[in-house]
Length: 202
Image (cartoon, rainbow, N blue to C red):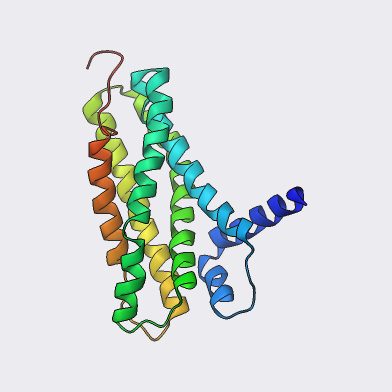
């Protein structure tokens, strides 16, 4: 039973990452009812991405920093994605949207899951440049570039998903991801995730 649930979750996450618009639309149209473990799998994909990428942010600080930043990156990202989520549904509904709370949550979850995968794909980039040029300012610029790229990709995915769910709306609520990025930046600063202690003292 558990094995079949895991396989089902992986298969659905694969579809969500390959065709996020179709994945969300099938739920909204009532063509499929995703069980709880599919929702959990989407969330775990985002957690995996933020944790593993966060660990590379601690490479210059030693083993303790690697694990600490992995956990703090996930905590900061989770809070940044979760805090503005009620506002997404409430303000989107007030602006005339007819999406249910579940469909709105699914669109956000698919987007964050996709963002987690993008962060996993960015690990070799951060790892290589951190090892090649172990200077705190340079490493900071590399990480900011990665986060900016992932953010732009998430905005694109979120726009496509929301337009698929409500094609009559010409302005999807991408302000939600801007708010997520703002809160996330503040939390990353608060948790010192952008402070890189170089082993070489530079």
